[in-house]
Every structure is written in structure tokens, then in C-alpha cells.
Length: 196
Image (cartoon, rainbow, N blue to C red):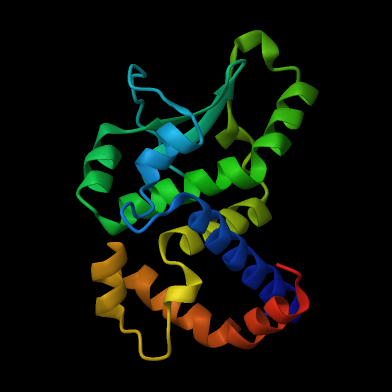
């Protein structure tokens, strides 16, 4: 990975940490479903009849951000809601990823929808704009930082601790440890250069 990408990755992880810190208290850990409904004040479309979708690589789509004239809302399958409440890591990752798209990219997608003159249909599917691999990479990095805060990964942190504490999958826990090991110098350099 080149230095520019490492710096962008570190900045996204730190931004996710700060974002999470804003909405988390000692008594109330960051809960993605609560955050969607209360903090972002997004509608979760309960009445929406979920239609099965599959990505190009054959994965089932469990959630996506859409928006209409009233703003952004999350379309989510019942299966993803049940799994997220149960603390299943991949379902949680999906929610964190979609929250990240909302935080990072909604204004871009709104501008695109207007330029495509899609207003006539009333509802715009942000997913149709996700052709930019950079947007997906950003949502994955920011989402992983929301799921497992980079400041909570220490040299002695184990995969099992992250799995238990953050209800993360083994893959996500390993990735968080690897990110911290790979990026800690960049993170410290950014922190020392920022006026936070």
C-alpha cells in the first residue's frame, strides 16, 4: 500500500473513532441500529418489501442506503436486523458499512441523483451510484473504525478479545489488529500534526 493510501486509511480510522466517541457513553456503547434511528434520524423502511438482490460477485445484499425527497433511509432485510441484534459480526459490519456511506457520501449521491434527473421516480437507490471503488473502500475502512475503534487495539490485544468485546467476526478482528500494527506510526504522526 502506498503512503498516500496509508495516510487516507489512518485518517478515516481516526475520523471514525471521533465520530463514534461523539455518540458513545459509558452506559451506552455505540449501537448501529440505535444510531441509525435516533442519532442520524434516518428512517428505517419497515414496510418496504425486501427484494432479494445479489452483487456481481454473488453475495446477497442485506442492507443499503437509499434516499427520497425526505432524506436518507436504510433499507435492511429482516435477516440482517435479527443478526445485528444477535451480535453476528457480518451483519454488524454491513450496518457499519452503510452508516459510513451515509456519513461520507450522501451529499455526493444527492448531487448525482439531481444530475441524472431521477427526481421523477421519487426514490433514488444510492446503490446504483456505487460504481466508484474508492467510495466502497472508504466505507469499508470507516465502517471498520466504527465497529472496532482503532484506539482500542493495543499491542497485546487478541482476536478473541475483539470478537467478544465488539461482536466482530474473526476476520474483522484480525484485520483491526493488522491495521493498527501497520498504521500506528502514521496515526501518531497525524495526531501530532493535528490541532484536535
